[in-house]
Image (tube, rainbow, N blue to C red; front, side):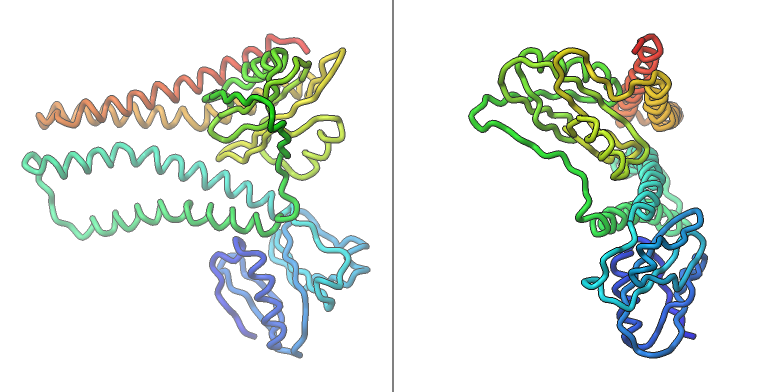
Length: 375
């Protein structure tokens, strides 16, 4: 039995599959994966050309009849992860396991590490100001030499690097897994038409107002044909028309989500995978009755609650931290008599707290408007 350590193998699925095939050519066949220690265990045998596919499923994952008939066999299983092997080459097989389970798993990990990275950045602001204060005002500060400084710096670098590295690897691996399935809006534009750009900062905190604005722009003859993550909307001038818009926020957006709405006649204008939520903007032309993405009131309220809770959980702890940092800075300035950097520090933390508070209030008001609105 041969064992090989692969610490971040689950973020390199395609690479690991190719590696397993290379090991099989050398006569080593995968038999076990230890999820705790991250060791792969191989059994030596006959050199063989095999194709591998790794899957993820929290429940039971029996092979479908199509996969079984196409030669796929389960050779290894560890918790929710499993490995399938096939004696055929990938060019010869007609059916391959779907990647949706892994992609969904990646999205959950991405959300966790994105939250962690966000809080690391938020918590780094005040210490950075303190470091600058120490560097430029050494006369008022006594620095004690200690080996623990190295330990603290190493821990801080690790806290920064772990979520950053994980998010980069997940993004790269996801692109490889779904390179032929990535859902993107298709932009069509009349090159002769006059183009107008509008900035709508923070639209995700009041999506209903943004939708009303887009529909009013359409009524004036300005057709939205694309937008970007910065909140810049691109319109082309044309004839007035009736268009229904909806900005939808979901925790996960599998392929079936896009297929379902497209079959119902909706056109995807914009989709993004933000740190903590997945936003999609849909539109549909109509003549008489205005169509709605959510025809059920409970689903609409659930959507509003999701938007509100996401922003509450995200910004309220940060606001509390910033207020705490401001109090600490004020106390430090008053006790040490050093007020040179106080104004800038408190100003930046104060403005950030006000901005995040506005986002929270907007999200609360959005949910309140939905509760008062009848479909």
